[in-house]
Image (tube, rainbow, N blue to C red; front, side, top):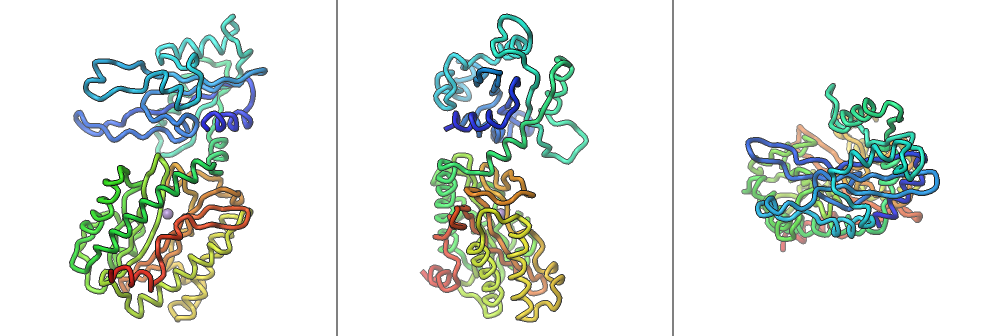
Length: 416
Ligand SMILES: [Mn+2]
């Protein structure tokens, strides 16, 4: 599978090049504590390996192409403390890179030197370019680790062109293969179990964090983690889009908005549901909920390959506008901005807000979220309903259709 992905990557690449992908390092937290390790997503996409300080080198020569993996050998002393790291054999197995191409990371510099020169060792011919994954992630004037590294190579090898592989990876990652669809389905399945436990235990007298714990409990039991910080927002808190404090007491008659997901084998789900803490929607809540639900369902029905993200956004928004006019919440189209202030969805995959060429049309086998919402601060109502859908040639298929969202079904479930 990873070999197939590397082949696809090679097809979109200039020849006479070496592409370098770095798994990354543990990020320091404080004292002797580190943040949990997250492998660089593009590195993982091409290797399946989650371990720090591993380098993938993909060489595309004129005649032949090959992949190499560089990692630390197992350190028996370190292993006593932290457990064993991947053996070369295991790394070869996971990545599909042949064992003779899996090497000690200490030999990496000489590998680059040898293959970019004119020596007898340069078996791929003349190398003209080095590709790095140079996508900008942080809005800052500081250079990222990978930018610093690319600059170092530029200084060390001024004869080589430095190029970015990021856009090629975005193109590939936008379109999900069968394995990826399966992982996301699995992530959604556990999300469903978590949300059912939430519905079962939701009561007006709880604090938001207590109900969040009911979700986490199911995740823990299933050996998975969240794919992003859970939002469990009651009443007016639901109108703050990225409310993650989850520490308010739930009020009488409140709706509670949950926006949450599971990371399964490095793939994310991203689901939103809104439940009445009492188990019953009020008439007003019902009215607003049905509008959001309509936008959710009709947009999913309408979606197909070839529509643009802009058209997608407009389609769902138009439904919200029309329905809000009908109930006299707004008079002019533009007034919707007061009650709906985010976009309708995003690509989903290895990252919860996954990479995608947002200016291009939505391709077949993309997975996107559909998440309309309405937020009426003055009434303490925040509602969002979000599903994860697969774009097939026959239209969108909701992968989260088994997570209930009809009012009757929710009330019935919560009644037990
Ligand atoms: Mn989302």
